[in-house]
Image (cartoon, rainbow, N blue to C red):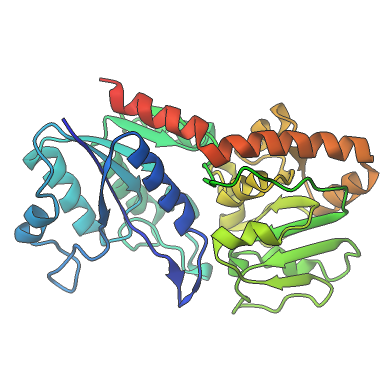
Length: 354
C-alpha cells in the first residue's frame, strides 16, 4: 500500500509575502521523507458550477495513482468550497477505500471573525453550522493530528469523533542550516505576522519599550510611530532579520489582556510564529492562558504573561545570565524544530498504526 498527501497552498496574499505557506510546505517535505508521494495542491480541482463542485472525471484524473487501501494525509483545512471538500473526502473514503489521516493546522469554527474576513467551513459566519461541517469531515479520519492538547480536548468534547487524536506539538520549521545566531540580552519584543489581525499594536502609543514589527503594512489601521517597523519578508528570509530580544506571540485588540475572537484562538492553536522564533534561537513571550504556555514554562523557553506591561517589566528585570539560559533553551528546542524531530515521529506513528 502507498502513501499520498494533499493540501491547499497559497504562497502569496494579494501578491505579497504570506507566511502561512511554510508550515504546509515543510509538512510536504517531511511526508516525502517518510515515503509519501505528493499529489500537489488541490485548489484548482473544483471545476464546475462556479468552481464549487468537482466533476467525476476530475476526481478520477487527480487521484489516478491512488489505489484501494492506500493512505492519504490531508493537510486540514483544504481551502476549496465545502461541497467540493466533502466530495473529495467521500471519493477517497468510499470509492477508493483509503485510510484518511488529517493533519490539522486550524479549526476555522474557532476563529470566525467578520471584522478580519475570517469565515468558517462552508463560507459561513455561523459557528454551529461551520463546526457541524468540520466535524462531518474530520470524523471520516482514522487518525487526526493536532498541534495542542487544547485543540484535541475541544474536538473530543464534541463527542462526534471516534478516530484517534494525537498531539504533535509545535510546528516544525525546517532548515538545512547548521548555524544559529547566539543573541545577547536585548530589551526588545519582536512581532511578525498578519498585522491586520494585530489591533493591539495600535495601543502601544505610550510604551517606551522597543518593539520591532514585521509584516505587510496594515490596511485597517496605522502603526504607532514609536514602533520600529522593519518591513515584510518571505518566511524563509524573515528569521535572518532578527537581532535578538523576545519573539512575541500575541493577538487581539488589547495590550492588557487577550481579547477578541482572534486573540481567544490562542487558547487552542499553536501559532507558527512561535516555531519561527524558536528556530531562530529567540525565546518567547506568550499569553499565560494560551495553548502553548505550559510547553513554554516546562521547557523554560521564555515568559508567560497576562499583559504586555507585565512582559516589559519582566524583561527589564532579567539578568544577562537569566536571558542566556532562555536563549540556550530556545536554541536547543529550535534545532529540533529545524529537523522536524517530534513531527516526523508523529507522522510515522500515524502511518504505521492500525
